[in-house]
Length: 199
Image (cartoon, rainbow, N blue to C red; front, side, top):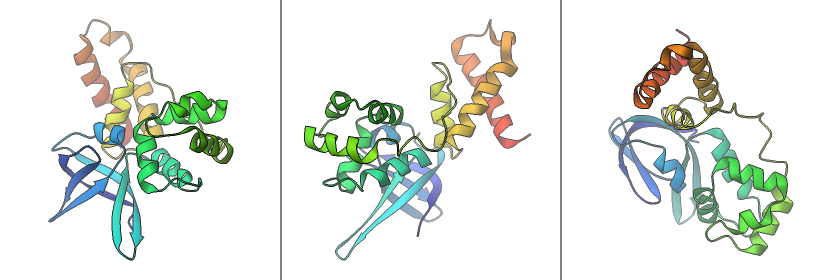
């Protein structure tokens, strides 16, 4: 019904973000780490999923398709509902979740707040090989992962954003060597947006 909502982040809570789109302010439940990737008073695009029951309707949101896909796969695991899936995603990064499932790392999953051993075992049985299916996200060296997340929060596809940052690094090259970290990051951010816009 709703694929995504684009608007300005008007407020952030522990478990939800508020997005003003036109004359409507949406309350969207999100994983804690997705909320942290959004910036107050900045425009963003949030992918959504609508939970609808006779007595309740709730909108869930995610910063990119990988996060939403992981959420939907978690719902297929016995004993995990929308609230539990959101808490799991909020307690582990996407890459760590995928790596733990692929490696069969039960201990890493059990370390996620609120995730017990039995549920972690069910996740391993149900989800191994199912989250890593859209190709690898290009690797960007620290501290430029923050740029990728900022671009993704603005509505750009995360893989495209990562690729644009890699291209920006190559474009800036030695010319950015003498810049302070903050200045170099701003320059890379601008260059990445140029690549993403196709200019």
